Length: 144
Image (cartoon, rainbow, N blue to C red):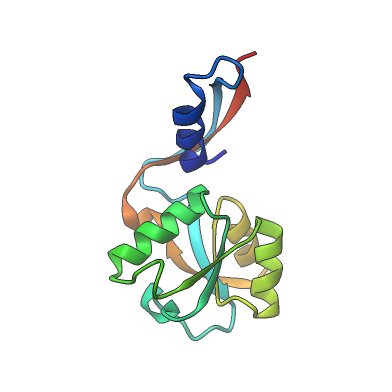
């Protein structure tokens, strides 16, 4: 899980013995937040997040990538609820939607956006490192 789901999981399960979880491993981290990105189609005209105003952006709502998107849009002066439409999609579905052009942006956690860029199917629009907010990903197990 990425940092947002890990924090939500921890806050909701610690008081319930049958559901309590424990963080057992950190699988990746970045002190500046570079694990999360927003990408656009390789031929998109968008050059900044502001160019995504009024468009559809695919993200896994509640994920670390979604958290980065919300913070980045707010920092850019864009209302993440009223001025873009976030389409709640799992990473492979969102990647297909970006390629098909049914969404104009794709906000996800490592390694999905990077893979699309590497495959020359997308272009990096926003690197989460610009937020300068640490991110991490880890493994949790149910305590039982």
